[in-house]
Length: 460
Image 1 (tube, rainbow, N blue to C red):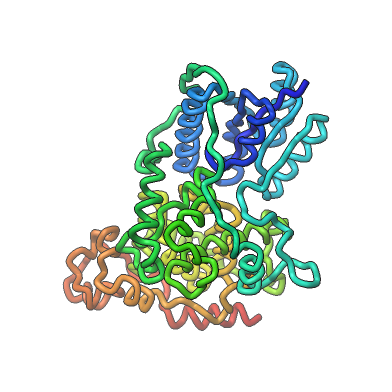
Image 2 (cartoon, helix red, strand yellow):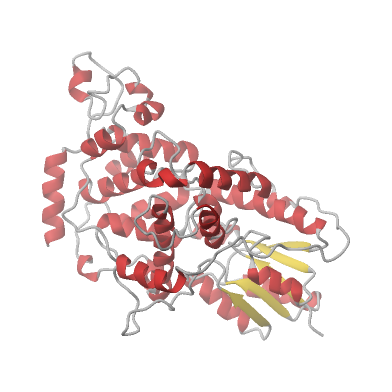
């Protein structure tokens, strides 16, 4: 007799979750989620993301109960102890099969191998991507090492597909009771991010109807809400890529064909997400802190602790960098353009190992995601796949002038500069010196000298 169960991971949605639907269709009446605090700590998962995750799982528990499905929440230290905890639960509850969505990181893959070795049927689905990793390859059968050809191949497979939210989970029995387990108690740190489906659907709808057609024009301006703001939900699988593209297609049916359109620029970012996931699966060394491009293994990073601390705290003396880091520290999120600016500054201006920045981001971001975070950092550091060339070094002053011309974003997070005119705010030190002590940090490096130093280091 079949007695399956569904195992939630970072796929915390009821709708458009093929693996969950299949589990229910095959008789599953229960679901499972593991709280692995020590494993999350090992992965540098931020407190704010853990809080959002717990709030969402608690919400799912209540929604599943209304549909007659019981959610079991189990605590285990880490992935090493998880298989034994899983085996005990399955045995005690006479469960023979598990349905779940694949995760592509090394530790997660090893966890699943250990669970499969216990003899239970483990049915895995690719619910986090639109094309399974390893399925989009060159004519020679290799993973693409440049994004544009990957995108073209991805589009050749998917451009005629009609994406959708997917099947909705239906009630399978009378409603059950649900009480928040102590394991899911929230500290409220993530409360600004709603976890109710109807509210999230409103957020998606507002973005699709009001902003997506202006995305390429506004996505680089940190002082306005020009991005989707959906990255925390993508990171935890609360919404799926299929749903987002489907929502875009509902307004612009030919968006995957008209790749020069304003609207496609948002879809393009979702394809970048796919690219980084495929890379991480094909090159597991990316999960282990290795440079993708091994020729940069001999860079002599300076790794000065005091300068790293100044960067972390937003005290570099470069307003756009400091405002961005303060935004991260205060909110758990950072605008995408600013992520590129601060990453370039850390790796090129300060010659600090990108791994330091990658780990710090993961420890703070509400949308922390290993594949995208690693891909972004290695792109900025010029060590990654299809990364910016090493000689491309963002000038934080001109970046500030271009993307925050009036200093609106800077003033929001750097109160010391609230009264500085827009003409001087991007590098205010001469202006401030005329008025005595300002309380704002002096620049920790000089741009031109730092640039020349970085060029010399990367040339070697």
